[in-house]
Image (cartoon, rainbow, N blue to C red):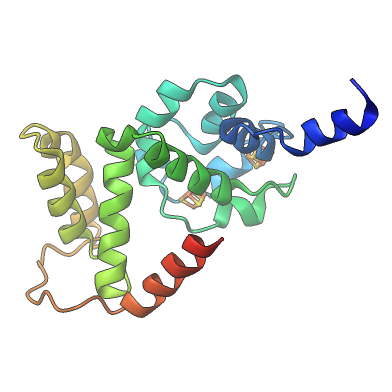
Length: 188
Ligand code: SF4
Ligand code: SF4
């Protein structure tokens, strides 16, 4: 193949989205600083450090089914503290987007993510009780709430979540921002 044709072929090479995400954490040295910094890691089935390792190894089924995926609250703390400066929160965002794009929408991770975003769009913040109630309803699994009961009780006893359900269902407070983002993403 001529050099010109080779360049043209390279230009049009389709980037594997999973490979692009794996590249983001390729330099992870498994130091565990991200896990130590993550406020939600205690409730995750795989710690953030383990998640990056699974990603490096291409264990996508385990990864998309893990609770870690849904429990990441995008606080960016792991990203700020990673000594390698890796874009960790961005990697999780990309994984969530990929799950939706690949139609893994029936999986609990992306259902949780959608419910999370809907709640933020409505109130400008997460309302935990409504988030979980909507998530459980969307999953249509009567036993699912039971698996979260110990965590819910622990959080309530520590005053981290309020049992109060919101009363008003007005238009989304962040509708304008969300619409703008959809517009920008749609045009890119
Ligand atoms: S802090 Fe960075 S280098 Fe350390 S385990 Fe986490 S991702 Fe890997
Ligand atoms: S961005 Fe997600 S994984 Fe990272 S520290 Fe925050 S909750 Fe944990």
